[in-house]
Image: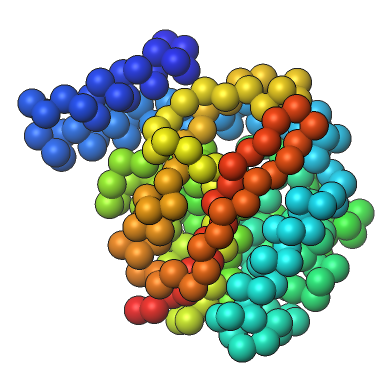
Length: 255
C-alpha cells in the first residue's frame, strides 16, 4: 500500500464501531508503524537536502527559541543556563547547535540514519558537544529523570494519534519518564483539523505524512500523560511557498 491507502485504512478502522477498542487500537498501531517507517525512509533519503534547506537560523527559529527560553523562565523562575535539555528528533542538529549557543547542555535523540550520519559528523568536528543517540521517541535510551527540559519540535506530528499506550501518548509517557520532577516539555505541532494526511511542503522534499492537531487535542495529550499546561500559543510560520498554522505548548511535569 502507498501512504494514502494506509491513511484510508487507518480512518476506516478508526471509525468502525464494530471493532472492540483493544483490537481497534492494535490494528491502528500496526498501520501507524507502516506510516512512521515511510516517514523515516523519506528523511533517510533526503537528510542532506533537508539540512541544506533548513540549516540556517532564521526569524522563525528565533521565535521558537525565544518561546522556549520564556517557557524555561515560567517553569524555573529564570532562564537558567546549563540546564540539561533533550532535543527529540534532532534531525540535522540546528536546534542542538543553537541551544548550546544559548548556554544549555544539549543532548539529542534521532531515529533516521540519514540524519544520524550528519549528526555524527557534527559531533566529530565539534559542532555539537554530545553524541546524538539513535532511539525512538517512544523508547528513549535515557535513565529516569535525566533532563530538566525536553524539546519536541515538529516531532509528534509524524505519528497518528491513537490513545493511551500508543504512538503520541507513548512518546509523551517516555518524555515524562526521563524528565525531572517539575521539568519542562516544549511541543511544536501543526494546527489543523485533527486528522492524518499527506502534505507536500513544496521544498523539493516530496510529500510526507503528518498528524494535525487542534489546541484542545494537543493540550489533552499532555494533560493525560502527567503534564500541566503552562503556556499555549498559536502562531504562523511564514515559509517561501506556504504559511503553516502552528501550535506551541509548554507543559510542566507535575507527578
